[in-house]
Image 1 (cartoon, rainbow, N blue to C red):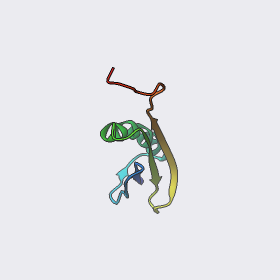
Image 2: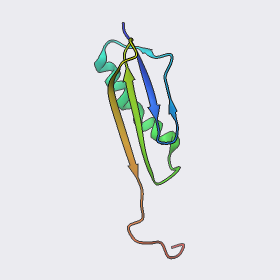
Image 3: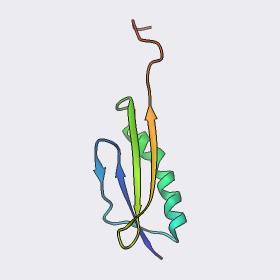
Image 4: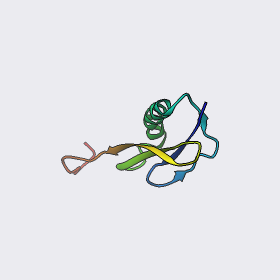
Length: 84
């Protein structure tokens, strides 16, 4: 069973995975990366109004093989003039 590594960048900090996970194949690694993005975003938000979260998947040779990203944007449509 191959090992895959998941490097994370949230726009302010990045983490390189040095342990990895044993998964059946590349498709399982892709699904894991996509599924992890909302959880990562939830842990960081609502810190800021614009953020992009990225996971890069590397294979056993440490070569990047897949990238997934999730972007978040919050903004007032009408300027806030008071507390209402």
